[in-house]
Amino acid sequence: NDYTLDTVGSSATLNTTVTTKNTGNISVQSSETGTAYLVHSSITVDANTTQANLDTFALADKVNKVTIATVDTATDLAATGLVDGEYKVYTVDIAGNISTASAGTVTIDTTNPSVPTGLSLADSSNTGSNDDNITSQTSA
Image (cartoon, rainbow, N blue to C red; front, side, top):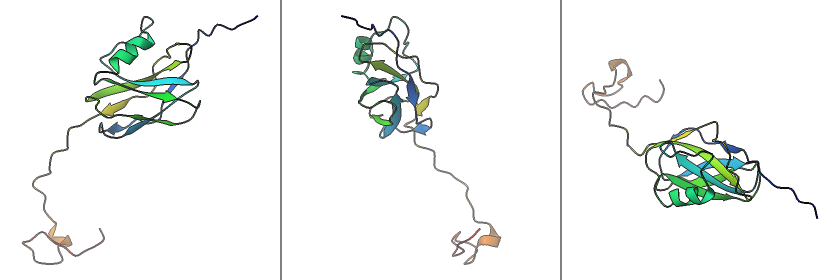
């Protein structure tokens, strides 16, 4: 009987490359079925890393994972519970081969923006009283 030994990792693609909160989903995909891992930049993934290592990291708050059931198809990976920072995607195929990191990154940022202060309505846009900063003008 002939067999083929698979020693080549899949390619990982990160479709979401924006800053987001840790309450939504990140879109990822892989060239092979297996598992995709969203990994914080503080975690080193190299030739010595195994899928078991990634699964252990996934128990903490710096890695989340999702099963890739269909190749080259966008799959939602939950960002729930991840700490702030920059993340890359790695995929592991069913033979256990780990991909290189995705080219793109996504940033998780749970800090709310500060409330702006010192805002004032320009007199030329103020259609009502000049001292209440309220206007009924609907165009710029």
